[in-house]
Length: 264
Image 1 (cartoon, rainbow, N blue to C red):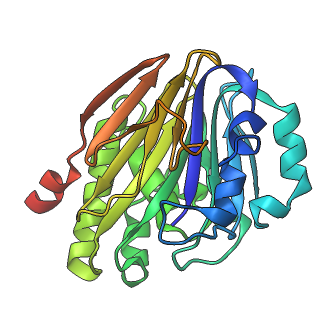
Image 2: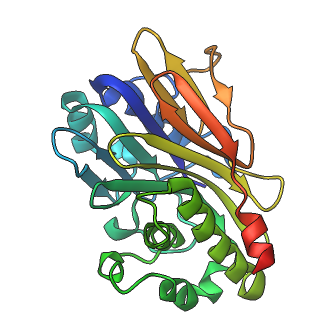
């Protein structure tokens, strides 16, 4: 599975999350600890917010550790809100369009996990995307499709509800035409103002997710794995949780798409 990291707070150089820590995202790309795949070499990406509402987006298919452009960019770009991802494909091709994060308008999104048996209902999943949003369907991943369906479910006014409804629709398809485990996911999303994250699975194997407030940095890091081995202060996000991060405050509410999926 993939690894990702997000940050919200006082502006910092992207390298302070992506490349400088001892267990940075780049380090995790070739030596992940809390993942069933230690190597995440199927591309990478960063979405960062600056002076415009829409995020900047940089994605490529190289392993994150081998791209000098990535290190140069993260050493020069400063942002108060960004999402970064290293990819381990669960079946779709290694291409730039399949690399996370995905962005539409001011929204950005990245995902770690899988929808069980997705290859068996890809066409059905695409049909869940509204006509208005389908032009943004550039790749072939379940992650991008999930993002676009959530946008269509009203993510602007209700991020949690929209994502719950989208996940429920994918979970229903997986139960009807796919295979178990039906859903495993952690995801981060942002509208450029707030950072949101979710941890959920239909079994007891939800991917790991942590957060930590740094008083020195005046920022919140949300990560698949802690950025420094043995560093104190990393709080695990419980399974079945939706988180809203605003400054040092974390609001955690139950994330329960399974109720909708079972009813369907």
